[in-house]
Image 1 (cartoon, rainbow, N blue to C red):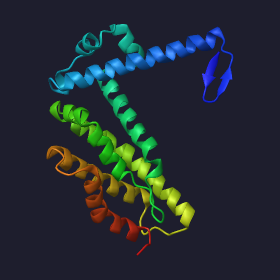
Image 2: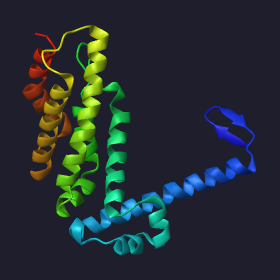
Image 3: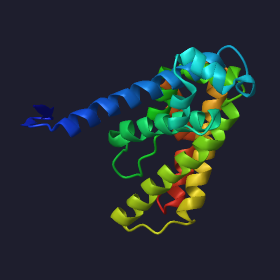
Image 4: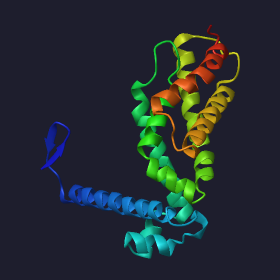
Length: 209
């Protein structure tokens, strides 16, 4: 039998095999990601080889290439997973009367994963994180703004894509400062700083006062 949520259904041998394959794939990807993070604590990203990663994860080379093109692909997929986690978590963060921006949840997320971001900084991978993160964050914020505009009928004073790019840059720069200074304030205080600096401009850009 297969249990899915509150329902129970019969499983074929094929579906059972698929479940096992999915679990094995997730486990392998997790091992590879953890190996990369561990290695980034030891040396710069550019000095890490695929052989280093598979030795640390204790998987075969063919297994690695079954999932990733190279170490850069592994790195990028790891970042996508991080931002996907943030996208899921921010569902309840928006306040009534303004578009939902993921500032508080992002500060909490980074604070809760400090060893990872410390590893990124140590391995000189943090700039790559900011470049990749800026694009993903900008797209998410632009979606939030467009949904807000469609819902409220406001007339933005500037293109949503431009506003999203500005907000994303401001948020990531504050995150960078926070990390480089060993997180001197809690996530909630940083979120307050961010909103004091940015939200007034966002409201004006959206035709609010």
